[in-house]
Image (tube, rainbow, N blue to C red; front, side, top):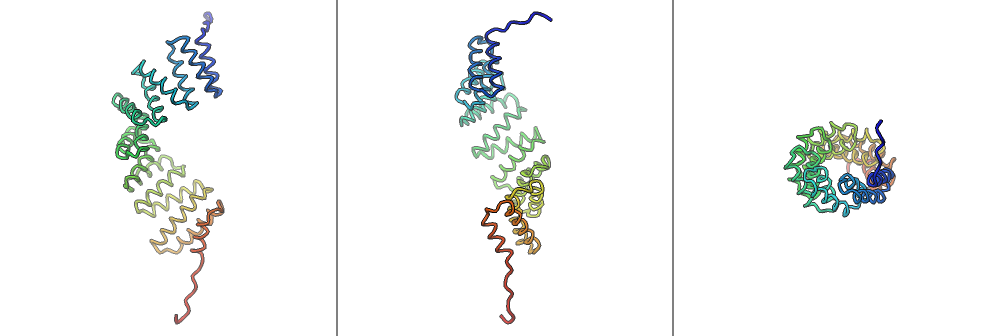
Length: 275
C-alpha cells in the first residue's frame, strides 16, 4: 500500500457535511459544505452537496442561487440545470422552469425526466393541450411508464375526451394490475365514456385489491345502482345495497349511505285490488 493521503481542510469539511447529511442534520451539513467550498473554490462537488442539504431543508431561495451559480459555471452540467428547473417550480417560478426544461429538450430530445416534469408543469397550470403533447412523447419514449399514462388519462378527461382517457387508464391498469387506484381511474373514465359495464368490472377489481376501503365500496354501490337503472335488473340493486352495507361496516359516519339503504331496501307497499 502507498502512503496514506493527508486530508486537507476541504476534505475534513466535506466529511463533516456528509456525516451530518446522513443523519438528517441538513443545516449543519449545508454549513460544512459551504466551508469546504470556501476553503477550495475548485471543489464544485461541495456546492452540489450543499444544494442537496438545502433542498432537504426546503431552503429553496438559497438553493436556487447555488444552482444558478453552478449553471453559469458549466452550461453542459445538465443535472444542475434540471435541478434548477425543479427548484424554480418549487418557488412557483413556472415560466423560468418551463424555459430550462425546454432548453434541455432542445439539446436532448430523449431527456425523459425533463419532458415528464415539463408535462407536469403544463398540466398543473391547466395548459392541457401542451401537457397532452408532452405526455404523448413521454409515453412514446417510455411506453411502460404507467404514471405517464395515468396523467395523460386525466388530461383527456379534463379535455372532455373520455374514451381516449379510458384507453390510457386501461394501459396503466395493465402495467400496474395490483394497484387499486389504477382500476378506480379506469372505472371513472369508463363511466364518463358511457361504458358502465366496463366501469363495473374495473371497480370490482379495485374493491378486490382494497377491500377495507369504505369509499370504494360506496362507489361500487353507486355504479351498481346506475346499472340497475339503465338495465332494470333487480339483482344489481341488491348488489348496490350489499356494497353500501359493506361501506357502512367500514365507516359508519355516512348518513347519505344510510339514507340510500333505507330508500332502496324499503319495500313499496302493495297496491290493494281495485285501487
